[in-house]
Picture (cartoon, helix red, strand yellow):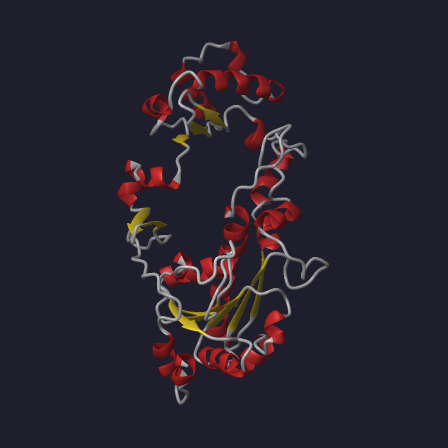
Length: 371
């Protein structure tokens, strides 16, 4: 779907590489500019090929050298998008900021991925996913009453509020550039995106379904929208919110005549009813509840690990996961015309350096990068 769009990615960690991989999955030509040597987040030097580089072409360059800087500037002359995830000001100090790059290519969409954004008192501070979503308000309701908020790994911040907002931003920028001939700078900040993602939840406050106190709202405090432990220490998830779904849940569990469950929206009873349902689900293993409830309008699902999910019949039929080179990976999404895109291979670091540089018109740095 994105065939013909060329993206230059200045490699980093987290949401920037994921965004570029997502666009590569959708058919964009992504050139990942990597350091000749890297240190992983765990301190491991020369880490193995990065799964987030699948479908990309890998080029190595030293951005602190004149040759490396010129390589990037030459690459972006024919590119639609540049993606970078440095702290504010770093790319400018390298001589690769928006002004320098758009001087070479006025149509370039310059995508910037940060946690705090390009301005503000926190802009230059270090941070990670859970810090950004804590400040934005997106972490607050992730948990139950009386317990610390539980960080939902990197899904809300790095991916949802970061990478996907950057992807939407750069694609909007490309459309604008094709109409106007002018590029733009996309400031994608996780604090912005994750706050924007809260709009649906905040819309519930006018109906009294979102409370300031954690564990007292419909999504974090009710008995019918919750996860429960089973007899085998596995978990299941309920989302029986609508009246007809709630009624079916009670019927399936044999609780339709229990007066304690009659008033679904009596919030004062939620803690008690959650405890009662916890006892019900703890009496049987997860497989029992799947046999009884899965595929019905109860709004039910087992809580699966990624590897378990890959083996679930629904996920298998849709091809949501695949395994390549001994590594479990998620397939590209969304799908178009019912087809799942085939993702490219994961390149080794610098695998395409000579190929890419040799293709730059009138500019050959192959000898420099082989030395």
